[in-house]
Length: 332
Ligand code: UD1
Image (cartoon, rainbow, N blue to C red):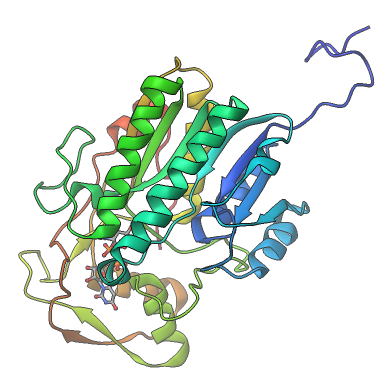
């Protein structure tokens, strides 16, 4: 007697597909874990909690009703115990350091963690015969040598050690694809913002936030004045343009990438932009936030921030074509 769907003996337990999620307690990682659980996967979180609160795990449980398994360990360490688990079908690799300014102060630390962590993970994948990896890359790999909209075929260039680490990780993953039979999607995120509707997973970095969205939220909550860096760019209102994407849409892109990798040949490597395809200025973002949250945001103009480019937004046709994914929500 067989279970009609899975051809398993009747009464046999159907195991959920396990996904190792490094950095699964972080901002994008936790939103992705919520989505994984909703879609019937079992996320196995690997995180050292260096930039994310343990309360994010409680939040995942509150939202989904399932408490994910968590290994509190650095991604550069020995992960054999984790990879001994049965039924691991893929890895989603978020773990890494991501503050651009800090990467200029501690370049080797950024390379050690981001590049070293990726190599370590790929070695464990080879031993455990896990083939599929979704990598958390960034639009920063397009550097300052290209004009938007950015397409995946453009040449890459780094403008800071954080960017260098992302380009190096993509290159290393490509080697694993070619020689180890790995199948990879390097998802190049544009600017993820906002949070799950429950309000339980806000972007709360430990220490001072660097990214504009949590800074806008802080200004609204604490009634402090934020700086808008530069109002003399060659853009319609003089402030920088970015492709802000709702983090829940971004999370869904990872599920689509997992499904996509199940059907590609060994050795396949694809970089894929995840964005809305539309640019929004810093002032438009602030106005959008004020309207959406019915609140005030106080700002003043400040000099340009070193390393910022005027305009950055995605060509999203490859994500649509390969993943059948596009954003569904307004970012704000
Ligand atoms: C940066 C990185 C990107 C990384 C992302 C998330 C680069 C070029 N970009 O994106 O790779 O994935 O962070 O960590 O390395 N702004 C203000 N006031 C503030 C803060 C920001 O006006 O207090 C402006 C910035 O000048 C920029 C926009 O807001 O125009 C977005 O800044 P931010 O959120 O830091 O993201 P990016 O720099 O685009």
